[in-house]
Length: 149
Image (tube, rainbow, N blue to C red; front, side, top):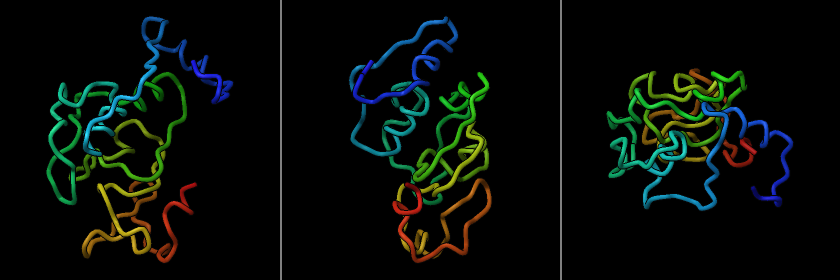
């Protein structure tokens, strides 16, 4: 475990796995595209094992991380942890079941798409910025990185 990032909660998290032990990934595992990398991080599985390795999920594309695959938020919330996600979701958005608050996150503040305009929060002509399931319509003109940090 890295000593460069102090956390009093990290050891407690490591002990709350199914078998009472944890696997620590000492390397960073990513692929060349954002959606496969995010779904891998969320699921703890390589994207090719869940059918997410070949594409970026963009506005209106009827694809999402399989609903049968649990997320880290599902596991943490089942163990009693409060969960939230902020910023870019990029793991599916064409049905409510694909969105963060339906995938184990108790709170979400951000956008679903792979990209959006950071000042208008639009993708094309549609608004893509949410506070949980509610569209955020009155916060244009400010950059997401300033609001989300």
